Image (cartoon, rainbow, N blue to C red; front, top):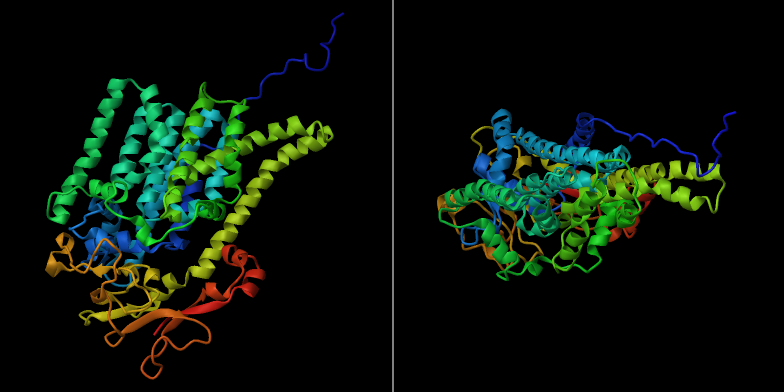
Length: 551
């Protein structure tokens, strides 16, 4: 008589087939939908994005715009090639929407292009993750990327750090797929066309390429990629700056080689990026810290060597955090570079959570309770992370979205109208760019306020446009009185922040209000939690509003 095999550890079970997950096409569409919402709803979070990128792009398209000292041909720290890449979308959009109020749709079309690029790179990372370590981890990654507040903020930004983020994401996908030559191409694009400082984050991938690719092919690909990226950059610099110079080298000399002092523009403590990361990434940040342990004990599906390549793919995260934390000048946008990889690390940790709970819970809980906990834990974490991200995005839009809505209230001018000045004082850094000025006659002007640093200055075609070296611009953040008017007598409109129980922005006898939008008054809103996250009832009760107004 046949006997059954004894129950217990001697019973052989067939291994479960891997979960394949959504197709790459569906993942791309999901990510694209999320990114397009960002393109339409997201704010401009940093005046550097406006004055170093949107304003020069506006000048290239329409012949007017502001410039920072970095665009002076004397210093030539910024590449016009980066702007021309975006002009491939913005240029046709400008022809379509014209020079009036439709300019704002050129702005949004450009952001939609940025959103599409990010979705493409993220979907490539999703696919590579699915093939390398299995569909379960890829599913978790997709959910984290699509719902992350950090990705919402960064993906549609016109910033070299956001472009470097996309390229690092594409390089990580190539590492996971075992395609070292693609890593070289992504790295060259991200560092030469985007942000060369991000080269620190690519160092683990450079080591991987040296070990994984034939040396001759790697060197040949690197030479070709460098020629393809750096050649057009040098030519573009020559054309726009009017002399032979290399903006990439100038930038590195100033920021890395000791030629300048970025601390002139503000310093932050060592915990700045932990605070910023906690707001942008919430639960993904502590989960990412557990990824090395999860990889160490992971057993899963995927290609041979997938776990080792995953370790390489995640290596830029701690390296980049250490590098930028050591710098005295800190900006949240510097952290953008590794946002997708933090989500990937968090997905790796979440994917290992059920097995860890089953292994540990058996000592503490009944088997059924352990299985339920293992099933519920990653899903509960995803839900909580998505909810916190939604609360963060809602807080940003509700509390700080007034300027982008307010400038659209300016009246359209008749064709041939005289130059019309829109002036700003202390709120100069909240100007959302000339794309929000509804007509070619509008110009931005500054009125003196309490700010004592260097203000931007308008590009001047009479001085040579992009080839000019205005004497009013310097590289020491030194106040220049010629960049601001002493009063508002020449202004046609004035935009400012009107605090409660304070005098009007301008003399009420001569100025009348045109429009106003609520803007959170940070000084009078003591609850950091109510400002950082939108909490129904609590935020409304604890946050006091000023009025962002046009007169």
